[in-house]
Length: 499
Image 1 (cartoon, rainbow, N blue to C red):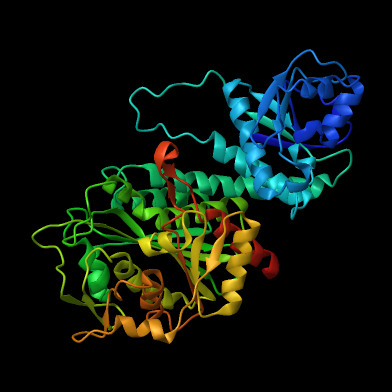
Image 2: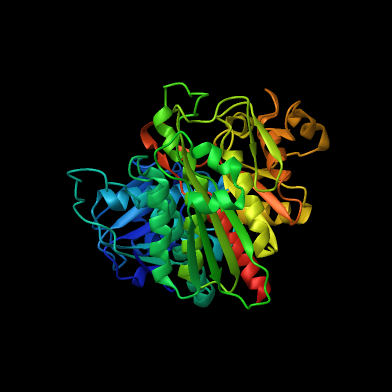
């Protein structure tokens, strides 16, 4: 979709539809009030009749209202004015997107960015409007034999920022938001694909396709024979039960100068996880196609880097595999040797994500990284701890942890710091190997992070457990594209510091 930032007198905006915010108790936003005054109180009168309460998410089209140059008005509820915050703002934008979609409009002007919301600035609201619009209008129908074609599709949206405002800053925010939205869309598309299509080889092919987008991007795919030579026994132990060969996707984006150490992003790419010999229950096992959302998020973030031409060096590593039961699959009690040389007792084959990640984390050393961040749908324990709203954030590096937390706040893609301590490391003791791959029943998300930390001694490192936020269930079932927003803001902030 094309976006344009505009300002000035809202009564003079020529558009097929002007989207205005209204509060409960018949209170109006500034733009709505300007239209209402020009229309001799027509909007206020209609609100007093009670057809629109103004609750967050309410919407109503109005026609033949005088005093403006729009084809129609769309009123969107913003709740109580005193309570209106960023979350309410994003919900209001989503409500506007749904109403515009149902009306099959191709053009509109959104006046919501000019409305003050607690804890936000105008630039941030402009950015949020783009990302929320794209998120709400997203649809995935590539696997349908007869996809239903929409009557019309929103192609152009003007973002009204008030009577006066900095167009330059808002336009830059729009540009960044569009780049992030492209990355989120790619991550959602990959996550929503079924396991019989989105295999490790398919992910590798999609990475190769991205190479065409920039001469600053290099892509290499490591095959199983190469991984075996490198000693990646942990990663290869996971793919033994599958007919699909494992891949290690290596992407190097050189947007910064040669002396700049890269940020390395590592994404878990389990394209389907049946649990291996430690087989998962049948109920909702179909959702295990989402176990590659860490890898999808990393690929989506790389897509954002390319879209925005960020002046920063980034390496993406995606260890990709399936985890299935088979006569040759790894068994509980097996001991494997990782690339680092540490031996691992596999007590549960369903704790496989850490096995493919640990070898990728060791491989990351060769890039002499500034920092390394791994992303994984790693543990159900993290979902129990934080629910489906916040990702778990783990790091012994307080500076990096805070940097990522702030990026999540900025990108409306929040993560919550979790503890890591030596007392948890003891749960990973093994009688027969250097380390066990699970740490018992309690603190499962923490012991999983502690396991990964054993392979990250040579660089600053952080771990994001996105098991609770990577996809939605129920009627809204589908990949969310998280944490592309967080990772993109992290890289954008770093690239600005590098400048």
